[in-house]
Length: 204
Length: 71
Image (cartoon, rainbow over all chains, first blue to last red; front, side, top):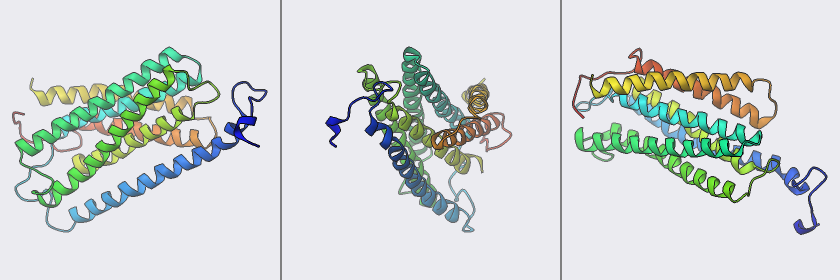
């Protein structure tokens, strides 16, 4: 049976193929997130191993990272996680306007976090002279991990921006909104990874 | 009042707000079932934990506070 031959079922606009494959899509996306967890875990393990290799931390000539700005930047990102959660909830309950506002708030906060990271990088590179290649293990591990995370946040912001456009065009309906669910899962994943990175770089 | 104080104050206030929102959302969704809802609950819990950590960092309970320097 071709896709074109499958029409809407008795429950409205959701066709049978979508219902049957939704679980598959969810499992596939969760596998993707797990693979991303493995990626970050390997780098985090390497950082923790090198840090505890007995040379003292931070290495001589490098100051401990300031937690004040990082704490503020972190709650900006965590706040975006909360707004993304309520965006999904409002969509599920049919409140489209509120959904769009919360989604836009998520994008703004995510972009704000990226701006904060750029500010932190600028301070470290030009103020403290800590660089990716010139500051040994500290610079390499910090910029690699936070840079990878920042890249994930950037792609997340791009994805959410596409969601805004798709939502405005009416792509998603109350019975068919896996794209929004996937975006919410991804954004929460990005938040959770930052919880770990914030802890290992700034708190311990 | 310097920049660091403002940053810490912001982290404390926003941390409280985000933690309350995250744990309240977790409480409201606690009875939900299904794989994705279980994942959401886990992530909300970790989000709340992160907000608490940022809040404690803002209060200088955890984390490192370097000497005051100009940015």
